[in-house]
Image 1: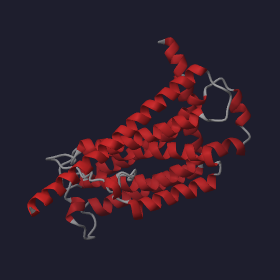
Image 2: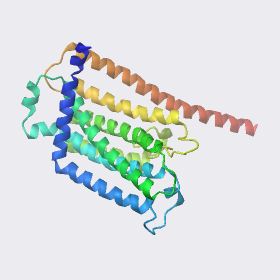
Image 3: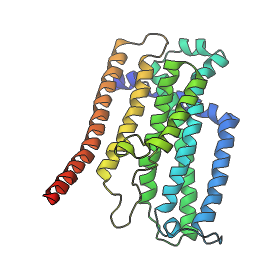
Image 4: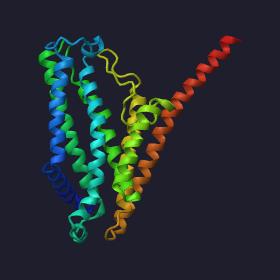
Length: 305
């Protein structure tokens, strides 16, 4: 057990995560973003999910218990994804800017502990911000809501919307910044990717491209829960695994001191396993909808006969 603990370098991963969190908290970019998020979401929750305003709202907005966390998580997921692209892509340029790459290189730590710790720090910081927004939504619902409060949609949307999207966009940004090695091009490419997803791909190919979960049928019902939870888990699990795969590939090809062959073998094995799992999730997701389409076509043909 001791050898496994030393191999994983848990202490160094935690140290890198704490360091990344402290760096981001000291910067004004995240401070301003977090402050604006808290102010804007408090205002939006008061306007749309309470009776303190006279603005006309559709019944679906304040008549469903899950509408408040669902709306909050969708909007925050979209806005923080753009911010994550800037912060994750700036991670490698920060070493060059402050001439600290030599200091990082001589530290007795593996690439896995360095990059996974930094990625974990970014993920945990933004997940904490999402929890704050969920608390704001929950308090507004408990005090001013017209529907029964249920904790399940809050947990569900946090796990299904935020966690996979955050992991995926950080992993994709890490990988692209190592391949392209130009922060401006990476940022523009990813922002264009998000724009294409929102305005063109949308629900094409049975929601396969929707990593933001903007168009997935995720509305929670107190009676039936989420429609087709197995398919939702397949689609969200696909992007969660893809994010982990991109981070592992970045670790394997990070230009730093050579690592032990054991660590490389373990990372390569994990990459292969996660890739097979992601392919399996994507295949089963598409095959379910394709099978349903074939059945409908057969029924139409039979009806015509």
